[in-house]
Length: 325
Image 1 (tube, helix red, strand yellow):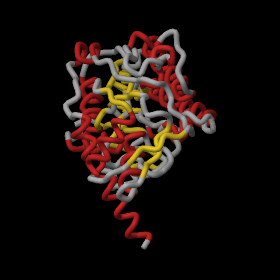
Image 2 (cartoon, rainbow, N blue to C red):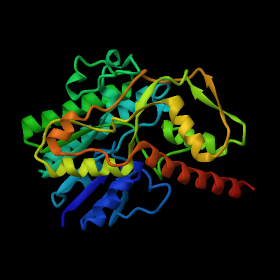
Image 3 (tube, rainbow, N blue to C red):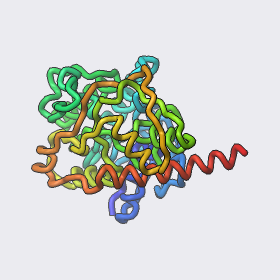
Image 4 (cartoon, helix red, strand yellow):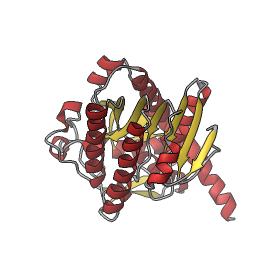
């Protein structure tokens, strides 16, 4: 049994990771600004604390901790990251967290540290063609992300690699591609496309229309939460120190994503395209390196994972309507 520290344990991915680690028999300590929103944490210990504060970080990262999973960040979907209104907070808050975590992980000689990076680090120029984006790991440089969130992730990747070179910190880094699933944000303003569209469809009446930002031809791939956790754990168990994509190669247009959700609902719903932040025109995980390096590949299809997510959000919408009546 290991003593494992999960930072960002109140968030979507962090809370699922806590559960998996606990079910594997480890002693899990979670730290976040808040508890998980939709169900109690399964952590053995849960600390409410701000990891931007060095004192909070130092208290959490102790010598008796074997591994750290660093998922804490100031982030959200396109409506949060691409308007420009949150740029300073996104960079400042996440950079402070990672500066603190790297420093105290070195100081406490932590055996292994996982850092969650993002596909948002990839250059804009490689993602202009919605049918043929290039998100191979080696394409990250010359760097030119489409958001300050992406720039901060590049900085933090380099920070942890510098800690690895200079202080022998044993680091694993994954670039996540649009993780989704039950118990993720769906109506907070920080939700991503699958959850936002599920909410819109679940709240719509028969023959309503729902709004889509842009013309809907922009493409993405989406990875179900269970597959994401599998990838994280497989990477941490490996000797691979390369940065790896953790994502799906099942690319879909936003229009098609909305149509799939509408089909699950049984409703007839039209799409109303409006101006709004859309990010790059195309993004899709490239999984050649991750398959070769650690033998990981997604198991859950988009249709299977999206149906589970829609059913969960639909139930949340029903709860919300009951509470408001």
